[in-house]
Image (cartoon, rainbow, N blue to C red; front, side, top):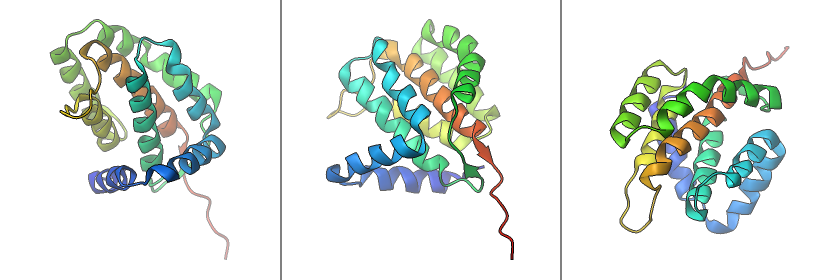
Length: 169
């Protein structure tokens, strides 16, 4: 399980990444996690505005960087693992999309308590719910949808973790 310290350090490191290094990170993700990258880019078909799509993409990149810090090896997310994560979250999606912000927070708190990577999921919730006077953030009606799609991504990453290969001496 990834600690809250690792989550916070990785989040801060990503926030401090200079803009000119962003294309390198995007390219790295494209090479290391092409299915996850494709999933994030496929969300253009949903009712998010441009800012929300960019925010989901950014949060997804941070989640990827956090998951790389796991004690386990993060292997490539396969289409099958992504589909499994989507299928497992369909019921949550239906509940969250139609719920109020209070119901979203309550459901998210329940999920955080039972998730295999609770600190990473907590980061996702905080990033979605964050209110900033300078940035518009997510519209209320899209917070549940953003949460479930980022949870699907996180679940696919969790499903792609395995013990690191042992080095033979």
